[in-house]
Amino acid sequence: MENLKYSDTELAEFKALIEGKIELAKIDLEGLRGSLSHKDNNGTDDTAHSFKMMEEGAATLSRE
Image 1 (tube, rainbow, N blue to C red):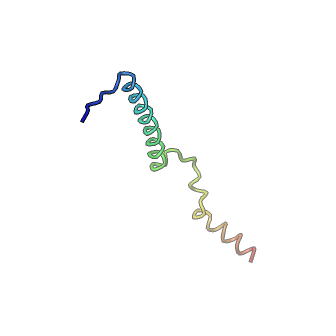
Image 2 (image 1 turned 180 degrees about the vertical axis):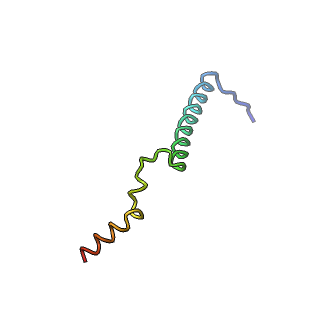
Image 3 (image 1 turned 120 degrees about the vertical axis):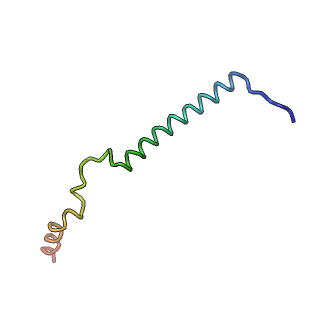
């Protein structure tokens, strides 16, 4: 087997690619953490259908 060595230029290019991918992974990780912890919540939890049961029921009853 022949032992191949990468040039300094090639190593620098690999390093730049890897560091770029690490930065993208960090951004993705922060986004996923935010979605799991509801950090980016815009305050609409109380507008979910489970909170509007009385209004929804009244509207349905009036339609029937």
